[in-house]
Length: 101
Image (cartoon, rainbow, N blue to C red; front, side, top):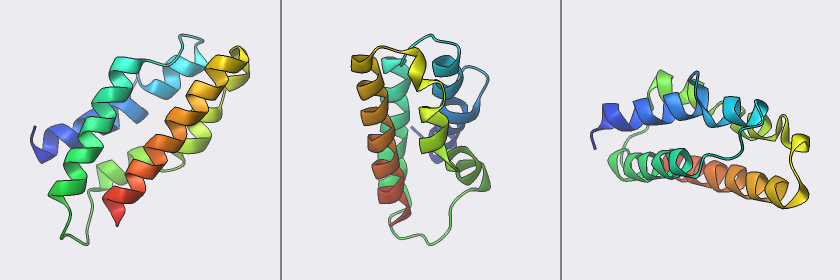
């Protein structure tokens, strides 16, 4: 994976037309494969940007308010799935903070 591939994966996965948040709002559930790809890309950028004090604008635009975006429409799902969505959102936010440290 390259830096540009990681940024693209995160952007498309969180902000694209087939993003996690869009799928959740449509009632399609949590896309585990896409979630794993986003997490892998975040872990890559954590290492890649370890000594950098700057991040890509595209990356920044994708992560803005991701927690709220993941919560939107969560009430469409049974409690078990709501908890899975919440756990995924928390995990993504934690990984994002690690990238930004």
